[in-house]
Length: 389
Image (cartoon, rainbow, N blue to C red; front, side, top):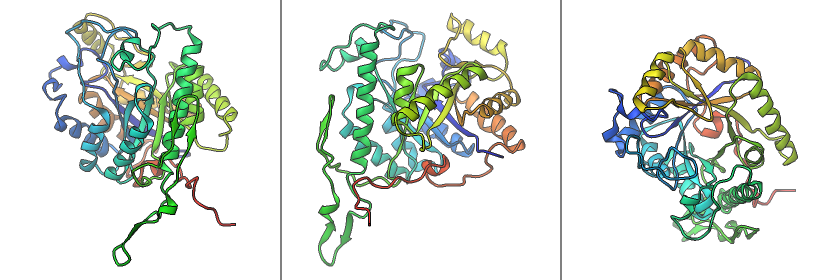
């Protein structure tokens, strides 16, 4: 194959269709159990997928973006995504683990050591999906800031939130670098455990954060765990292009994919990152089995499923056609959102993956033992290390 096609899956509760939890193969009583998430992650691992993401938020799931609802017919309640990832890490071998974190209401120091810890536990397979919250009701859980009621045209509020997220990622990256790779000596004979000269204050001062550092966790195995972000429009495209390693986008056809890709690349160049690899993954909701299956689920849910991403309802072979067409347009990978778990996940790992393998478009074995390695990303040099002349 001329270029590797990358595949990720996005896990959310019983699946991305609101009626997924009512399907016979669903496991709604186990959504808050470790075993459920271990089983899903091991299926993704067996399917040779690049990584999995785990949805999270600081508010209950809701059918409306800017408000809590009172529905009782949909999944409500979830476990912490970072803790899920840490639990499944020892039970998987190669698949990357990318939990979601809402950076608007959490501290970068805390998240930096949590993701660094995940990188150690997984032996170099950690990442994070940074998520911005513009929801007033989520801000009320913390009482430390006020976010105005959602207005799609409130550019100033959105710009501030995404600028804050960019600073947040910069703090994460500096904290991950605040220990040099050889800062730990562990010499019992001399009694020296660390070289204190190789721990660095990051002294970040900005509009949103003042963080001195250093981290309390040594530099992660990957140096920099993977940073990813979902983007739907110019302001979030800018965040992804200047701060992340992978940007998830939501085109609905190949022309849309080309248009979005061009905008992300323009933002990447404007951020001075033109020479760096920034992967652009397209998100798709997948409900294999045809429109009749989707219609049955929609009827059970009492409303038609809609999504920010394209909803695919065909066969694995038809999805392979679509992915390869979009890859030819410049999309480097795909994050597939299974409509029903585990059914649509197994259709990906046991149907789509073999189809792509037969076409020479997907790996037959893992070629690297770190997430950055799977994505062809180098291990970054530490910004604080002294570079020999």
